[in-house]
Length: 130
Image (tube, rainbow, N blue to C red; front, side, top):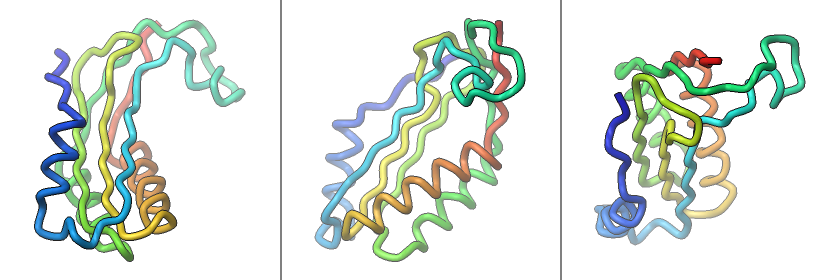
């Protein structure tokens, strides 16, 4: 069952009103979406390359909270917010939203890349449906 998708406009308003907003010079967002191409096809690796009709998606809340805490400890990072969907998702559905607020571009880009990688590699379980 798909969860309600958050409003990025609302998230940005909340972030800009947060305690450390005066230290933030850049916000970056990530919106992961279920695609119709398989992981194997998109990455040109071995595996099932049949078209994807959906995904079974879940996550570990404790691991996610730990990943967010780690991201907030990175140099120059003052705001982090994450939303993950769950359940049976169809092609085109949102999987995740991530918002990072940092002081300068290199810190913010590095944090976004690190956090999304951690989420994908350690916090979530994804099963493609064909």
